[in-house]
Length: 418
Image 1 (cartoon, rainbow, N blue to C red):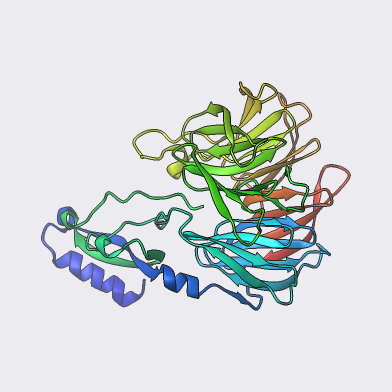
Image 2 (spheres, rainbow, N blue to C red):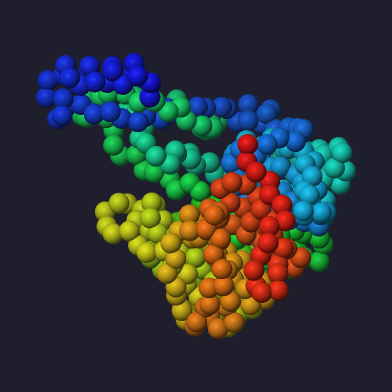
């Protein structure tokens, strides 16, 4: 805030009678909108760009794909992880998720499902677009409130909120709406055809020639046997706040804010509910290693206290025995600070503990996890433990590490944010 703006605030407060009771400085957000036609027209294959806000990560063969939250996907040649090379940027407004089968990349764009052909990386092309297949929910800013005068009636079915303008105003308290509900910011494959690997925060997953896509509450299944013409074949309600997908053998594990839901996908066109493990309302990615499921539960904000009318729940790791897939059982839990994604490799468990950094555990005894190291210099969000090396997405960018003999990691490369 500049000096003149501060003086104006002081003058208004000083000269207003009963200002302590009647007036307050509010941080306001006004929506920036586009029509879906404008969104679709702006999708393009562009020259490489700097990453603005890290989103999801995905690996297939020598390709590394990095989501730039709601902006698009950065494509890297990762044949030498110590020296990743930029290839292109796919400008995709409203993109959150991605998945590949063969040379085809599937990505969401608000309401639409897009298919890109990556068979020739010198001539990437968008090949098809399935419109209006996903529900659209407005994504609100992480802080602040909405001013009363926003005309929500002007936002119709063809309008998308693509951003927010921030401002500060002095207002009478009774002229202000305060009911704004904040939204928190932030494998195996049954198919023998080549697919890639996403992190634990993924909401897309391919099973055989079917694409699973998770929206806020439903599991959508698309037949992609004709790669360029995805056809929705089923739409199953899971729960009120479904968040992540993880495939283990013939079972799909859905992480949600109220628990873990397990589906049998042996007939992938028609996933069948098997069982669930419920917990208090907390954000919940899940990964599975043989007969054990690891679930990070993040408290705070909307995750552990969504309505703000009770205590904030403590963040933790829950470990479930899923050897009896119809009856998952909690066998251990451990306190964490700010967990997001996680991954497993052999006896190692990698937990992205947010502001507390990346934590590496020995999980050979799940009743007595051993903390091997903590990398608190990074605000860690998600991880992909490959056989050859580790890929981590963090606040500062994308980091790739070598494994070393003493269960430690050493930095190979980093792709920093702009």
